Image (cartoon, rainbow, N blue to C red; front, top):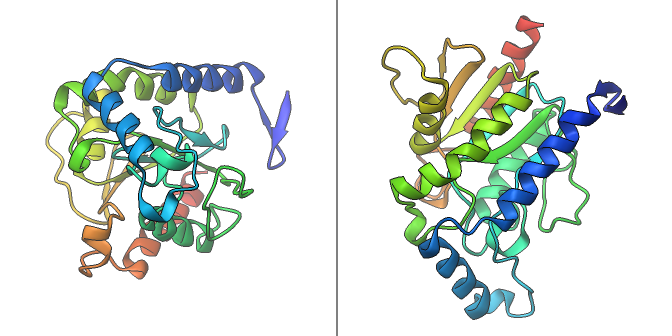
Length: 234
C-alpha cells in the first residue's frame, strides 16, 4: 500500500484509474468532437498562439482516496482542451480552484498548466464529457459515448461520500448512471439524499459568474456544505 495525504491507497485502484485515463486520451468515439478539438488546437486563440494545445480527450484527476467527487460538463475549448487538465487554464477553473482552495480541497487557488503543482486534497474531478464540444453543447449520443468512463470511475472511487454535480447536464448524467429512484430537482446548493449524497450546483461558467447568477460566495458555500456533510458521515 502507498499513501496519499497520509492515508493508505490501493495500488490496484490507482492503476485502474490511470488505465481509464489512458483510454480516455486515446478515445476516438465522437468524430464531431475530435474534429472540433483538433481544429481549435490548430487555429488557437490569439492569446495562446505560443501554446502547444493538448487537443485530445481530457483525463480526470485528483486524490484516489477522495471523499468528494466533482462532475463537470466537458472541457473548455481554450481551457482544458489547451492544457490537458480538467478546469485548468480558463475562467471557470479560476473560479473553481479559488473556492476549492479556500474550503481546503486544493493546495493552491490558481492552476494555469498541468505542471503548476496543484494537488487536490480529498477531491477528484471528472466530467460527463471529455472533449470540448462546439458551443459547449455536446450531443446526447456523445455524452453516452463518454458515460462508460464515468461509470468505471464511480465503481473505483469507493470512498466518495459527497458528489457535487456542476450544472444540470452533469447532474442528470450522474443520476442516470446510479439509477436514482424518483425525481430530483436541479437547484443550486440543494442536497439530494442519495448514497453518496449529491449537491447540485450551478456550473462556474462565465455565463453564470459574469451575470451574478453564481457568486464566489455562493460557490464557496457549496464546498463548505460538502465538507460539513463529509464530517458528519465519518
